[in-house]
Amino acid sequence: MAPSGQADASGSTADRVYVPGRKPVQSGRSVGSGRVDANWKNAVMTARVSDRIAAIAESATLAVDAKAKALKAAGRPVIGFGAGEPDFPTPPAIVAAAIEACADPRWHRYTPAGGLPELKEAIAAKTARDSGYHVTAGQVLVTNGGKQALYNAFAALLDPGDEVILQAPYWTTYPESIRLAGGVPVEVMTDEASGYRATVEQLEAARTPRTKVLVFVSPSNPTGAVYEPAEVKAIGEWALANGIWVVTDEIYEHLVYGQAQFSSMPVLVPGLADTCVIVNGVAKTYAMTGWRVGWMIGPADIVKAATNLQSHATSNVANVSQVAALAAVSGDLSAVAEMKVAFDRRRRLITGMLDAIPGVTCPLPEGAFYVYPSVKDLIGTTLRGQRIEHSAHLASLILDEAEVAVVPGEAFGTPGYLRLSYATSDADITEGVGRMAALLAEAT
Ligand SMILES: Cc1ncc(COP(=O)(O)O)c(C=O)c1O
Image 1 (tube, rainbow, N blue to C red):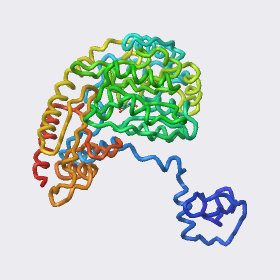
Image 2: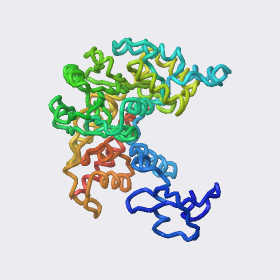
Image 3: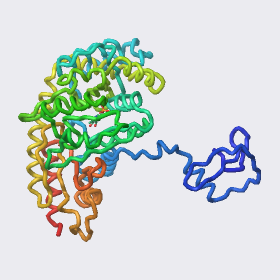
Image 4: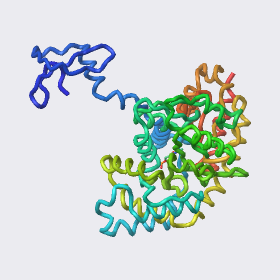
């Protein structure tokens, strides 16, 4: 974009009117002084990015992970609890299927934007096997990870101003994805006292005539909370009775521990089938975060609309990744069963160590691979000469002083907490949380 009064690439000298606090608008009038007013220049600079995209914050979890990895690459002994990804390699049979696909010219070409037909069939079969929810392949859209499934679902469902109820602490992508689609996130606060689970009464208090969608996730990122089947049913019935769509994120369906039980909302409330979108993917279950395959399942009209969107946005997900995902969902669940044993052991290890630190309260999570301790008692204390202002400040001190990366609760809409992923080795947990304990013991 050319500054005011200067010719742009097309040779025009179209002028723009600067209104403080607003983006410049075309006036259709041309000037030609060639003088660039400083105020105007600033306006042009801020207008380079659209308001819609400028409002989006960088993913805080990815940012913490990137900082930790950069410090590590620079030789620092950083221990990262930031990333939400299994530390295991993708199972060999899945990798072998991908290697074979690479050599097959069939997969070197465009394929249907909505996903390989055989993968959609396999996802429908896997869903019936794992959650008992029966759908056709026409109700499945294969996406570039669960993230694109969410983006597509909100884009297909929301008009500007539509409200979406989601509980806080929330996974950091939900509100951004909702806003991108023109929706308005409406938060329902939960905390450790309620096991980070919202009640129907809380949801009802947040409902307005503009409420279109409820976002539901169990097991949850960032808290690891798992709703009991009776609670899932009650929430589903409330949504159905009030004509509210449910976008239910089942990406951690296989990662539940102890007595906790995963339950799929549209299975417990079959009437929801016509107003429910399921989001899922291979990332967490098969240690395939980098392969980028997820999916959405929903009523055929919504899936068709989302497929149309995807056909213009990204086309098909990389075929090699889709073939790998086909091997994953068609195979058994032995790999996730093995990972679960390790995650369960680490869950108890990290919770015990964190909860023993004065000023930290860490409930034992029942699912996913995150702990979400409260550090409220440390806010206002002094550590290494600094008064701890908030949890983001504490997280940054922990990274600088103990070389341990954690994500502050601010990223999930609830200051006063930290999120740590325990999808990392037992040795790193012992060393990393040990360093945190030694540092935090100095707080006065
Ligand atoms: C709750 C939740 N949903 C969806 C996703 C998306 O996963 P992906 O896009 O890697 O498939 C994640 C990843 O962290 C998540 O935590």
